Length: 287
Picture 1 (tube, one colour):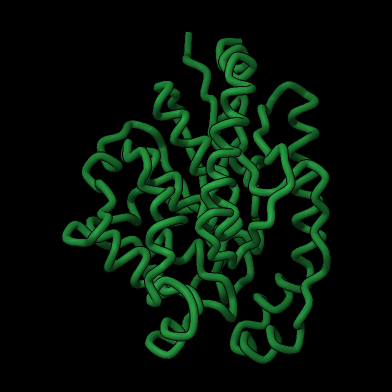
Picture 2 (cartoon, one colour; picture 1 turned 135 degrees about the vertical axis):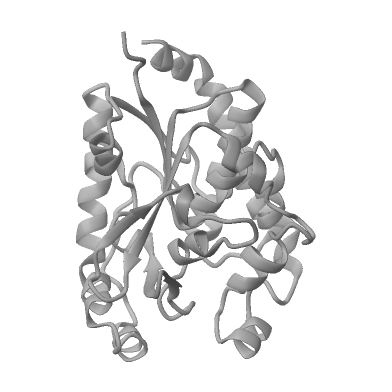
């Protein structure tokens, strides 16, 4: 009998992903693994550390490394033209000789499928890539999935520019099911009552992304796409096809927050939510 394929889906959300960092570390503590994992934006970076077995690494990117002026802010803008220092985060820090290297050999050796969502800057459509696009010290796939328009430059993969995967498929449950998963564990970065509002600062986006009109269109309709996506997650939960983790308490953390204490609290909330629902999760995985 063929073994059931249970997938793990990790939403992005910038600094809000300290929540999924906590849950993923709890998975490592409990030896919980999945044959298929897909992440979006910062969620894809969290997944990489999880699949490499590096407990605590994600937390450091939310509490320790944020104090470097190269991580986020004016110095990063002056030096790179980007609000988030993508080369610093996924290059200088994460390379083999860096301060906090990703264990690439362990990621590669992990038998789990690892997919990342990106948005094609030319077509404005989501695309999905796996480990074949990740090499030692070349983490452009994760950078591309995390490249928020305006805040970051698009990242080229195979000569094609890409932006944040969250623009077009923020919670890729449908894709995971299409990839052969029968059931899913989903980690969200927003609470269950969240409703995404239309993007503000539209003139800024239209001006900054004028080279990529399909990205401008994706930003314009993003709230509708996201809210439909969000509803689908809970529809799958009602069907018994998804087990959903979402922050159980309000948080002050936003996409661009740089508050170490707030990030630690959100990580701790992830641990708390996991342990409160641990038996429920294990029962779901045993079905």
